[in-house]
Amino acid sequence: MDINANAARLFCELLLDDSSSSSSEDEGVRGPLEKRPRVEQYIDDVVARYTEVEFQQNFRLNRGTFNVVLEIIKNKISSKTVENGRPTVPPKTQLLMALWYLGTPDSYRSVCGRFDLGKATGLRATR
Image 1 (cartoon, helix red, strand yellow):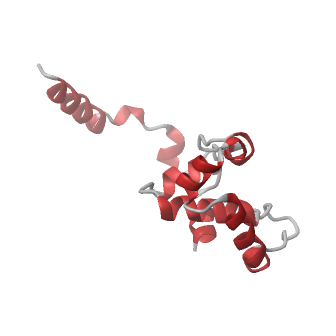
Image 2 (cartoon, helix red, strand yellow):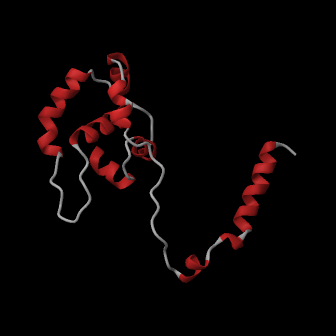
Image 3 (cartoon, one colour):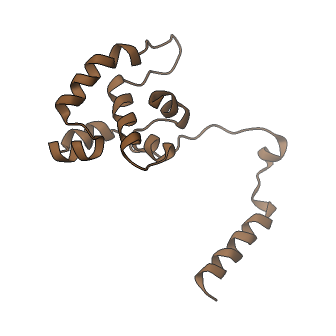
């Protein structure tokens, strides 16, 4: 049996196996939300170490131009933290994420995972 046939068989078994559903799903009760795996501290640990060439290849701007653009738009894309709300996404992160998304063929899911944001937050930040 080849690999594709094995994969198809396994997939069909998983679809037909209803014993994997938990009793909380049957009762309509949701458990606690789990944080999806993401890259933490990507900007501080990785982007900060990029050479000028690597930064420009990934974000399509050099660091100097990026900083100028950030200064121009940061007041328009920053918002204040709402009391009892979640912390807002810093303007630097929003701009880096938007430039990465526009400059690469990555999906929102991939980009949000890289920049440690939820999908809805990433979509709002990029827009």
